[in-house]
Every structure is written in C-alpha cells, then in structure tokens.
Image 1 (spheres, rainbow, N blue to C red):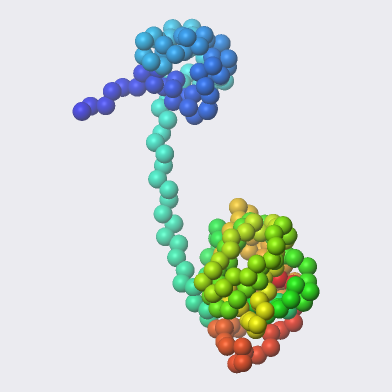
Image 2 (cartoon, helix red, strand yellow):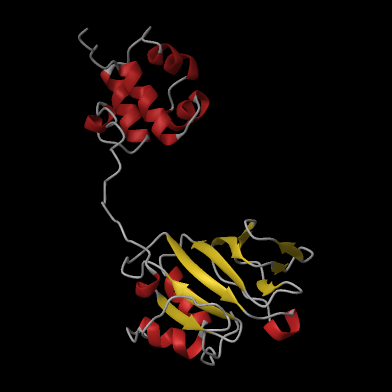
Length: 238
C-alpha cells in the first residue's frame, strides 16, 4: 500500500508532540482557537495561508519547518567497544582498607567502572570516615561475609552470593564481617559524570593521582591471604 502524504493536521500533531504541548497549550502559543486546532488535527479543517503565517510567527518557526516531517528516531550507533577483564591487565590500587583491581582500564569514558576489591578492615573504627562519590554502585560478595555501613541505614551483613545497590553520594563503607579475615567483592560504579574514574582515583590519594598520570604499577592476580604480601600504605580510606 502506498503511504499517504502528510496532512497539515498530521504535521501539527507531530509539532505539538515534539514540544510536549496539549491542544490548549498549542492554542495559547499560536493564538488559534482550540476548536479550530482540534478540527485541523483531525483533518476536518485546513488553515489558510494567513493562519499558517501566524502560527509560524507565534512559534518562532520558519514556514518550511511547519511542513517538515519529524525524522524517524535514529538507530543507536554500534560502537563495537569490547574489553576482556583479565586481572593481569587491571589497574591495582592499595589502600589501608582495600586492594582494588580496576578492570578493562583501556576503555576511556566508560559509563560504568567494574572493579574487584579485597576488603581487609574489620571494624568501622579501623575503616575511618564513610566514603562518598558521585553516581551509584552495585556490590556483589564473591567470597567471605561483608558488613555494609551506610549513612542512613543500620549496618547489615551480606553473605557470599548476596549483593547491595546504593546511591554512592550517601556515605558508605564495606568491612569484613565478624569471624571473616577478608572479603572479595565485585563492584560496578556508574555515574552520568564522565570523570567518574578520575573521581574514584582522587579518593585513593597519592597513588591514585599517580595512576591518573599514567604511572601504572605491575599487577598480580588476587592471592589467598596467606600468600599475598602486605599491601602498600596509601593515604586514602576507600
């Protein structure tokens, strides 16, 4: 079937939809009575040249724009981005509380930051001040038992296989639960801020700043606690 040509009514409906207006709002902006606009949109009436000129002037549009059909929504571009998250390629950052392994570091301007984390702090007093940063984060316990502390909720313990999703702007801290020496976590941080990775690096103090400037340390995979050397001292808490 051959598609019908667009009508004035269809074009006005499309224009109104793009602006998010009701018929009443369209009438108020254009100075054309609501009943007239309704009949035009239902193809029961058309507009004279004078009315079309009035419409274009009131809406600050060229006449040609009134007759321009809205393009179909473009297909989202396929970026073909891919990165394999191998631990030997990760960026490692050591702090008094955590060992971080930032995965897929070669991808720039990521919308989410995947990170493996070993947690050593066993009390909130040992951890220090709660941490805050932009965005949201999802944390999944891979090994051990984790105690979650947040600014507005009571502490809770998560077992292996359990997870938590939080607003990262809220103060938070993850520590090893009672009877557990260490916890291994998989976290995903996400933010509309394109500088999220830089913000996270800033939390890690001097070592994070060095990594931002391309001084990447030699990395090793996470090892069992008995086999792993003592983490280097860092100034950050998270």
